[in-house]
Image 1 (spheres, rainbow, N blue to C red):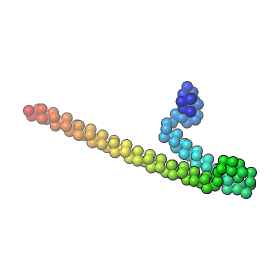
Image 2 (tube, rainbow, N blue to C red):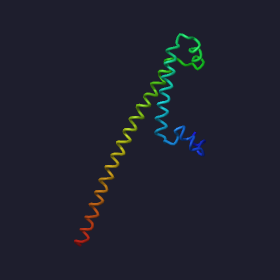
Image 3 (cartoon, rainbow, N blue to C red):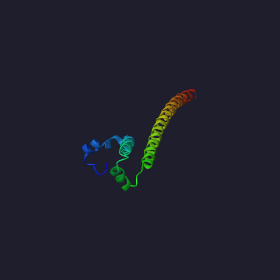
Length: 119
C-alpha cells in the first residue's frame, strides 16, 4: 500500500504507513488480535444460532481454529516484544562499546603525542 500511495502522503499518514515497519508490525498485531477476539466473542455468543455458525462453516472455520490463530498471533506479539527488547539491549551495548572505543582513541592519541614529544 505504501508503494501504491507514494504520491499521496496524506493517505499514507491516515493509514499509518509513515510510521515505519516496526509501528506497522505492532499495528497489525493489535488489529489481528482485536479481530480474532471479536470473532471469537461473536462465535461464542452466537454458537446456538446456526446462521452465523453456518457462515463460518463456509470458510471451514471452527472455534478451535480461531483460537489457534489467536494464540499464534499472541505468540507473535510476545516474540516481537522480546525482539524489540533485545534490539534495545544490543543498541545499548553498541553505544557503550563505541563510548569505550572513543575513550581508547583519546588515550591512544595522547599516548602518541607524548611518545612523539619524548622522542
